Length: 79
Image 1 (cartoon, one colour):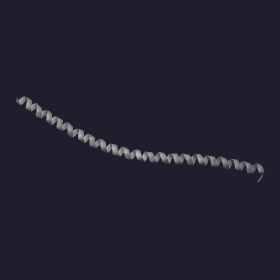
Image 2: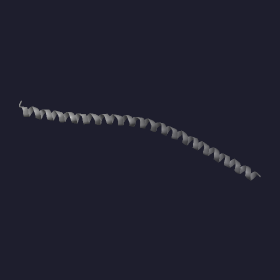
Image 3: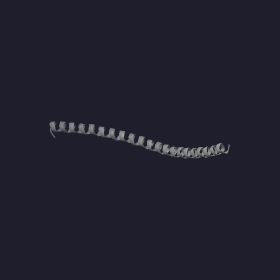
Image 4: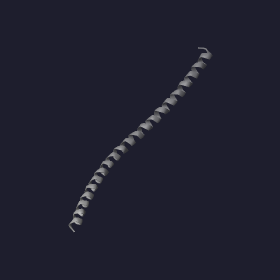
């Protein structure tokens, strides 16, 4: 192997190492993003559950208010 060939191979290897570093950094960033998405998914599930509970409470309160309104109207008409 000539000196020029050895230098060329050295340059190519250095370029491959640099590209590998870039790929590894991207994979690391991707793993971080996936972990964040997992946490977001968990949070969204909790929020959905909370919203269902809130809807149920609002529906119940609305029914109670309607019942009170009917009772008040009956009392007002009874006078």
